[in-house]
Image (cartoon, rainbow, N blue to C red; front, side, top):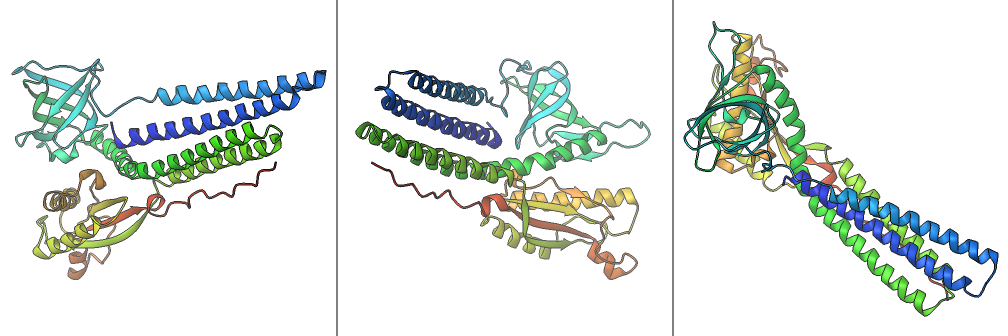
Length: 393
């Protein structure tokens, strides 16, 4: 189960609990109303009973609706055995489909018939362009470019577990652009949702405290049958507390995609090179150390090139520079890939200096690295604090 699925499931549980608390309150009100009209055998008393029972029925219907909604949350991120496709051991296969789930060394590919195939990557796996022009050489890609939502063609052999060990992976440039756009939105959100689970647990604790107040209300109602008004006031207070808690959860979730820069650095490269210099490595060491101390962070990596050379060459070179920085952070500092926004090379776009001068071109041959922290998780809204009204005798 992915981090986002866990958070959605927990949110459904919190909503389910708070609705049941409201239902319990309504039942208490029914008891108090019945007790206050048992001595009145007239038409007005009967109308009050019908009105109260109608309110309870409406609450029960709403509560059961929330329960069913919470129970229908489905697990994703793992292969569905009902549609799993097993590859015979040693059999050579070619499969075409879309990547629906990705880990460091494998991914799940949904083929054109709707079946799911687990594909394992090795050091010998080649990732290259599926080109339409037969007169030029195919582009080569790294396995980090195999993103969710990418349409690919995989050639390989089956292993003992029924998985496909990839020997060659082919894709088009257009499919890669679409997948990058999707991944740049999905990956940061997943990382943020994992951090949001702690905040949701705090909301559950608030709901439990409200449950204790409901038990206190029941004891007061049993001891003082004439305190219907006080019980109703306490019930209104509890409902207001539930509403305030739900509003706080909504505020947290609505700010999950709101980031602010914490720190940014720039590393420079030589002409036509994407090799990291000792100074660049030292700078990356510093920002990696700081990133590990932050909460709810992601790292944005963007590559650039000077105006030297051809446009296509500079685009590839800027992407290679960005990939080199990501690889250094992942291999030397164990920065999880889910914390790194998909790196992108802008080529000669967005220069920070004049490309007509030597000094300006040196500054433009760069990779920018930024630490972004989530404002909703690092600066959450204040907890719910309410003053309980005095109960009357």
